[in-house]
Image 1 (cartoon, rainbow, N blue to C red):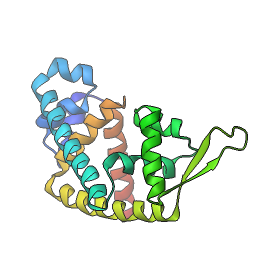
Image 2: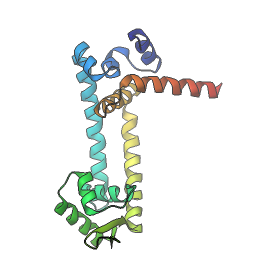
Image 3: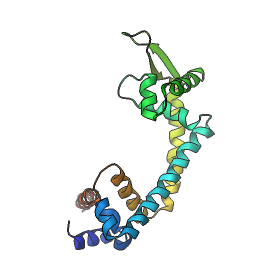
Image 4: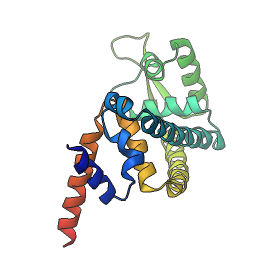
Length: 193
């Protein structure tokens, strides 16, 4: 997408073209053309990520779980396959012994259930109990409420530049996001006419 077109489109979306420009380009190009603008976008993205992570860690604690226990429960309930302690540990980047200890703690709290694998009696399949799912719902409601309050502190440019930084971390080009956003805006405008 030509530079002038990007600037005009970003401006029409309510953002400042100069401060978010680096985030709109591929990360390598942004670093070369406007290192300061690129670092501004990274700093803002990290600020948003840190605040959201604080909220994500605070809410489980307020409801009696440590953040890693909450993560175990999320991974178990959110899995699209049967989960074992080894798979949970792998997903969380922890050793299997620590994963086993976390699963045992959650089982004692009645939040996780274990059953033996049908083909390998040494392996336990773990799943979230009804109480575990209800606790996840409760934590999620509070996280959503607090994240919404935080979102109100961010202007559209701040939200968008954070999104672009996160996209770069997972290998999605900012131009593709901008194109999708413009396409979505045009589609909504057509529906509202």
